[in-house]
Length: 347
Image 1 (cartoon, rainbow, N blue to C red):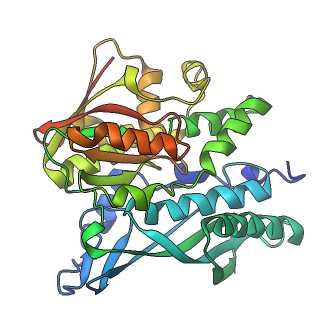
Image 2 (image 1 turned 60 degrees about the vertical axis):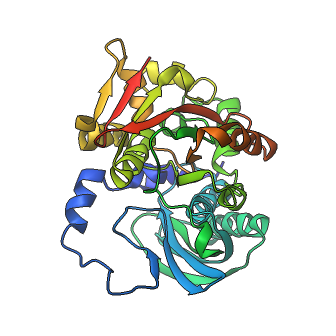
């Protein structure tokens, strides 16, 4: 760990820093739509993971940016997590990253140069693992440490995986287990052991590089990644965009080891409550559901897994692909159905 605890320099961490969904919707409500640009295949209207712009009949560019404040104290790990999370938005569109730019805001009067250098090195190591250059960026002197990437990628225009094209009867498959926000809350309170920290780093630095392979599958109708709005929030985005409802079972959700115990002991983030306040009216929970289970459903996932809506006929193939690519806990968690943007959660 760094001698300076990075998490003490910021009021939030990781994707838990996101502005709550309801407030974000108000902020974006008056912005003009991008309908005057016919080559913009995916814009801000569908709350998707990245913008997609048509270049030619074989290529479209995927563009996104993502940055946040420290979720861990180790500088190198913070850089790795932030970079992995940013590249995930390209993968979630079925795209392959081609280059990245760094977004850097640091309290120069509080952090040694070596600590900042380690943050940047962590991000660069992830870009190297993804096979892309970290080609530049921009930095400012900021009151809290902020790091992330602008990420660009390429995808075939016919292979773009939006979050609003799901169909009734689609299976829902989640690529990574839930619980990163729970672990981060325990870490900040000094209650996360070395094994728990290793799990946290392992999941948050695993690139969702399976995305382009999933993009080749016609049976996948929609895809997104689960990040700051929690599983329910990002699933509701699929439901709203596609005009559908969803049924999921809590018992089928993949969870990181020990997060259920930590959640039941009260280790939750403030973002979990903000998320529930934003979209809880669109969720029907089973009568026997505990508060800690609801918290896990809303838990902000930093660098979380891909959420796939696919035709039942290819669900086994999708799961097998996840498992082959190292996502051992990928699971089918429910189904989409006719309905009006609601999620029903059974025990």
